[in-house]
Structures are given as structure tokens and as C-alpha cells.
Length: 599
DNA sequence: TAGAGCATGAAAGGAGGT
DNA sequence: ACCTCCTTTCATGCTCTA
Image 1 (cartoon, chains in turn orange, blue, purple):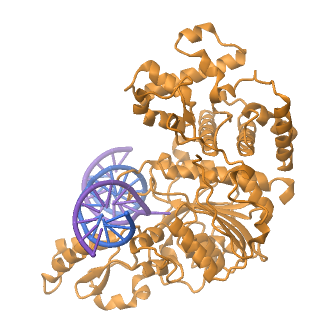
Image 2 (cartoon, chains in turn cyan, blue, orange):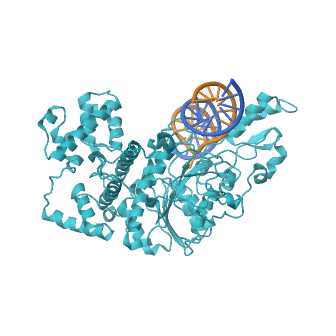
Image 3 (cartoon, helix red, strand yellow):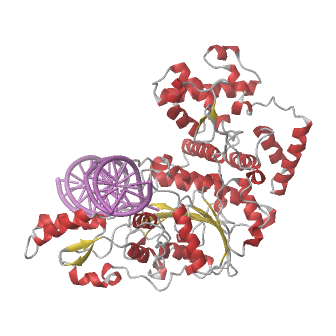
């Protein structure tokens, strides 16, 4: 049984170019296979925990969350299990972390000296842990290869060379990752090693790329790597604690608006060398996050300064978002026709019923839920209890609720939430973009509430039009209902090839439907899970379509958004941690694009 | 069982005052 | 600098109903 399932939606009629790839055959793409059996405990990172060659006991299963937590951070599973066994169940995370770190130090020390100090074994560290599973791959003592391995190794070496990696890099990766490592793991290793070499050749061994890690685990390793780099910069006084914190600009207009006086628009910026394309990239997420999130996002995206923009400057609804991109910022132009920036012009029929004491001119952020009928009823009763203007406390209650739930005045003393097609209008999508095909009203609100504001994104992407007159190849991650695709299409940029990755089948169907309705001439290929999009698959796709010109996406905001009262856990949250998949995939594409084949 | 209805605050930043 | 008050926020999970 395999838990990594590649879902491939059929490409359109002109997709013959892809005919020689069997998208349902995992072997060819070397997707890592994760065996699942009742005797193994799968973890988020795809690691199967087996304690000392035996199945995890029931005692361990009670700690499985804790184990998964640490394994998810990139720590070797066996060391975590060993640490919990040693210091006892119920110990604090901090104590477990300390113990695991001690193990790692001992392990690194033993590697440096080519042996294990006998004292270490008596200090609670099990020497046998070094000689199986993923720990083994750290050892430099496993050089022996049989002739079969050599043959397989040569093939992999050739493949890596074709991908543009040097013989030394490929050899080192294969040596460190072991003979069974897939191409995906090897390329991820090389990618991380390049960063490590360039920025900190003396990084501690525990955060160097390590064998047998899946793509997502390498993302976590990279996070630790960046954290280490950041610490070192702080230690060297390169950045101060305060000066580094990214602050939201006021007004939130980014590098300029279409309506600005041209002299007030920022015309130049210097991008870090590492950020330069190809490919261009464009990343989006909510502006108002827990502290430090945007610093982390910027840091992982080559220290590019985010551009914070409120969509209230592009439509009649606020949408405060941050965008990190390496696009030119000169000669932007907006989508036509421009959307009205106030409620009155957007919804003229509301004017008749709008009370003078409701001074709103634009709506707040469109979210995934709407005000209930009960609330609408409460407001109606509160207002109609008075002949004239209600007293201040009633007005305040009504206004607060109207702002909170984006209610419009649609009748005498009657408020109502926006309809889904009004969401579409405000967000810049075609009318009925999310309608039909079996999607419920609730799901339409959810999909629309999670999407781009098309006009805002299109303004930023407009600079691509003169650069790609013959069309563009894009890799669209976390595509949602296709905000980026719609923006590019409305800008008149031909979509030659779109590789779209979106978890929700409902959303994939919406994009597919839009693609067909707009008579696109290019190819739309969609996947359902960013975590299965490994380096080899990206390389295969890039090879077929001639490389990616743009990597665009907004990773999940669930754990960042202020509306989330349950799990606003920051970038480490269950969904928002997928940001690191964007970083990983972008890195992979950059790596591929910097190769000779696409220069 | 799917879809709809509904209740559930806290975190962060800004404004204004002392 | 510090405090208080005000405003805003790509949501989650439970319950009800057809």
C-alpha cells in the first residue's frame, strides 16, 4: 500500500506534448514510497518509527504525537524515541529537546573522531542507534558498494549531470544519501548543500542536509539552516533585533498604485543576487500575521522585502496582503476597466437604504464565512424599534456587526451579507466563476474567501506582458480558484503551460472549468499535493515545457489569520507550514533554470 | 451525510492621551 | 515611553436539519 498517490487530472486536447510521461506510474518519477502497515507508525515526515527493530509499544503510541512533533522538526526518530525512553514519559518538550540535542552532539563528535567514545554509551546513548536507519547515512564508513549498486549509481550520476550538477556535487550527494536515495532526495541534498557552502561552510553537522529525508523534511532542515544563518548574522551584529522586524507600511500601498502621481511611485529597488530570476516568483499571504512571520517569510525568500498592499485601493473591499516577488516594478499598469473603490458605486441599489449614520464607504476583508440570518434579524429588530435615528449604543452595535460581517443595507432596516457572485465581482473574477458543477454555497464562500484579489495581483504581474509576448509557462502552487491564472489571462498574457497544484478537488474543477470556458490554447496540468511534487517531477515537467517563467502561489493562511480563534499557530501551524514547500519548490525550479538547458 | 447555521476571542497595530 | 482604547482579521468546530 502506498500513501503517496499522484493525482493527475487529464490534460486538455492539445496535451500531446506530454504523451510520453505516464503520470500514473510512480516508478518512473521515483516518488518515494512509504510502506504502511499496522506494525509501523507513520509520521508526518514519512518516517516509519520502529524501535530497535521492534514495533512501537503501546507506551510509545501514547507518545506518538510528541514523537511526530520532534520528527517533524527534522530530528531522527530513533533519537527522539530513545530520549523519551530515557527521561521518562510526561517529560517536558524542552527536556526531550535537550536530550535529543545531546545525542546529536555525541553523534557528531563520534563522526569527527571516527569512533564512539565508550563513555558516551554509558551516558545513556545507545551506540547501536548509529548503525541503522537514517542515522547510518551520516557515517562515512559505508563506502562499500556491490557491482549492482555501482551500475545503479552510475545511472543516477548521469542523470544528475544531465540536470546540470557537477560530478563532485553528485558524488557527494550519493555518498551522503546512500545508494538507495532517489533523484529527488539527491537534488534536494545538493540544493541545501549549495546554500550551506555559500553562506556558512562551518555549519554544525546536525543541520547539514542529511540522507533519507523526504522533500518536506529537507524543507525543515533548510528552516533550521536559515535559523542558524540568522543567528550568526545577529551575533556578528549584521542585524539588530528591532531593525530586522518588518513593519507594515501605512498607507498600505506597496511600491505604488495605479492612481498614484507617477512621481510618488517607487521606481527602483535592489534585489539580493540570490533572488534574481529566472524564474520570476510571486508569493502572497495575509499581512497581519503573528509577530515574526513576515521576517521568516522574507528570510526564506532570499531576504526580498515584502510589498504590503491593501486591495481597498483596487476594489471596494479591504484585503491586506503581503507579496514577496522578484518582478520588475517599473511600468506597471492596471486591469481595465477599473473597479469602483466604494460601496455606493459597486452596489448602487444599496444607496437607497443606506442610513446616514453608517459612514462606511468600503467593505472589510471578505472572509470564508458570512453573517447569520439570526444576526440579520437581530439588527433589523434593533433598528426598527425606533422611528427615527437609533440611540448611540444601538448605532454602535449595528455598525460593529455590519463591519465585522460585511453587511449591506438591502431594504428598510434590512441588512444582508454579500452573495457569492458579489464576492466574485469584488475579487475580480468573472461572474459565476465558482458557480455550478456541484459546488455548494458554503464552499463558494470558502473558496472565494481564500483567493487572490485579481486586480491587485494583476497590477503587479502586468510587468510580465512585454517580457512574454509569446506566452508564459507558470508553476502555480496553492492555486485555489486560479487567481493568478485569471489575472494573467485578463492581462492578455498567453498561458502556454500552467502546472497547477491545488489540494481541493472543488477548486481544481473550478480552474479546469474556467480554462475550458476561456478557450485556452495552452496546457493545464494539475496536481493535488505540493508535497508530492518532488525535484525529479519538477525537472520532468520543466524539461517537457521548456522551463518555468513564473512560480506563483499563496500558501495557506489558516494558522496566520486573525480570524482563526482555534489554531493561530503561526508558520509552524498544520497548514501554514506548507510555506516551506513553496520555498523548496521555488529553490528546485531556480536550480533547474540556472542549468545550461534553459539559459 | 452534506450543507447550512451558529457561537467561539485573541493578537496585533494604530490613535490619542498622559 | 507607556498606557488605554479602538479596530481589524484569506477560520474552526459543533449542532441542526433536510
